[in-house]
Length: 434
Image (spheres, rainbow, N blue to C red):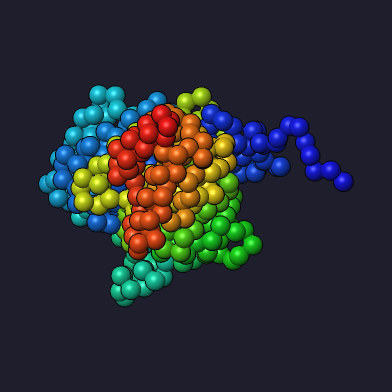
């Protein structure tokens, strides 16, 4: 038996050199929509989750997301609160940009009540989200004594008021993963009946409010995300009528988004870089990376390098990303392991999931620790000085001896290039000349 081959198999159809990893379907899911896109809720759920947004910060986020989206259509709408003056000022600024050609349409978020409808009638928006709690966890305890019937009556009165104001309603079915499908379908029917005389097709946002949904079709409703969307599609709703708004309380947020898409949901609602209530909303950059892998946005994908500006903005606002946050965290592409550094030196694709520098505009990095070995120093020298240096170079050995002594002496913090740059330059010069 021989294991040898002269031609390495890199599975380039799945892992192309110039693109995000691709999905190669053994059987393409029958429910996949013709188009998939995202809607943004950073100005609403992100702010609700703790982002301290003023008008200028809100508009800075909107502008960055417009640059990210470009002409791709990846993010098509952003929702804003309308309760405070600063929120309305941000909305007005975004509407002005949108009328001037910005690619993301501003919408609003309100509770499904006639009082809230009065707040948005004159704002100039074309669509509003309307919070309509769907589960008995909500309807039986928010609406006493009438429960489901009282809740539906209040919601439908608000829908009628929105339609009278010339605004398209988008019903947010709160806590849908703990809600009766009987109530959900009956409410959808009632909303559609109200909208029909106006010639308006409403939208419905399925909210996994507590992050309890599961991405499997072989579990029962209401927790099965695939079954929820299978049921709604079978009920006559089109992919573009549906949105999915999940949270990450139990770690399944991206998996649930992909399950929703596979069963015919065209729109994912979330935030960029995962901000949001509690554990955060769906991170749209992570979802869209997979959407691109599925074959959408071929030839016109969003500019993922633009989100480095958003990460920097959050840093300046005092709400930085966790260091290990996927894709854009400080350490997302940083290794401290000698075996990984050695792999990067030999063939950097070995420890890169895709072309990170080109697609994200972020470098592959090494921090030096007691586990980094001499390979980590070699990587940094190549990265910063453009010099390939052999392991037995005397100057390199001199630097590595100093690093080893630091950690043998009890040092716990990593060593970065800035700390050793002058030492390396001097030592290599000595080593080469000697």
